[in-house]
Amino acid sequence: MDTAEYGKWKTGKDLTAFIMSMSAMPIKIGVALSGAVVGYGLAMIGYNPLAEPTEGLIKGIINLIALVPISCGLMAALIFILFYRLTDVKVMEIMSANQRKIR
Image 1 (cartoon, helix red, strand yellow):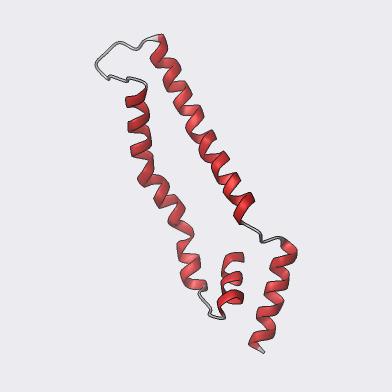
Image 2 (spheres, rainbow, N blue to C red):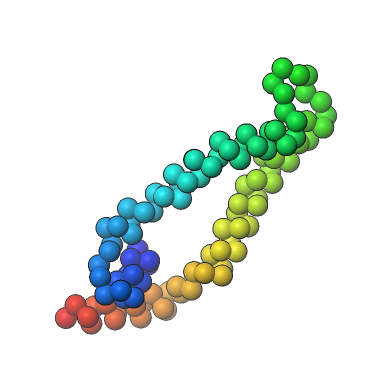
């Protein structure tokens, strides 16, 4: 909702419905990319479903399970820190400015 208020403040247009409908987009992108990430990750560690699992393969799968979510979380945190400048105080200022524009 903060981004909807920000969009209204920045453009003067109420795009709340569109912005709120986009809230499911990260989930859809994640589902679309997960198959490719898992497939390429398994190929990188040399997974073969017909072969007997080795110690290296088991460690590779454990690393894949741990490192992919950690790297995604770190990238999301970095993007959030660098580009999301909406603090509670700033959002309250934007909301009050939007209310003044309506009246």
